[in-house]
Picture 1 (cartoon, rainbow, N blue to C red):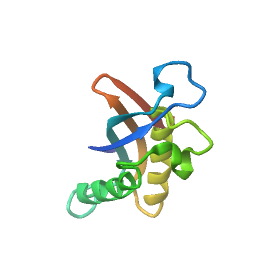
Picture 2 (picture 1 turned 135 degrees about the vertical axis):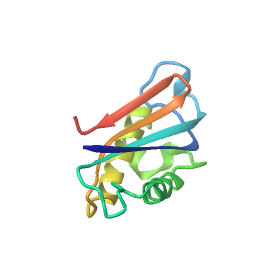
Picture 3 (picture 1 turned 30 degrees about the vertical axis):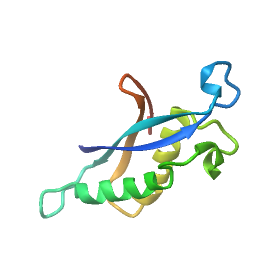
Picture 4 (picture 1 turned 60 degrees about the horizontal axis):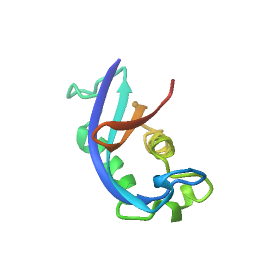
Length: 123
């Protein structure tokens, strides 16, 4: 199995719902996003997936979050926009985006700081 990984980022504001502490207040992060896709096959160029495609589809999705108040967005109106829920949302949306390709989304990691990360994966 081949795995391809990219890092990208977005900035947004949020506040956690049903949380007792500072993070229930409005605040923001410069999130770093790590996306890993997997494939068993390579194309005639020896690529599992062109990194340009992976970056483009991921950044198109992140553009819908960038410089937004996440709590106002449809995916997070009923659930807290925690790093965990953001990772799952990105994972599911990217799975839809790559549904017709020969790659599968393996995992999405969302870093809210240099040393704090939440992950969502198939297993």
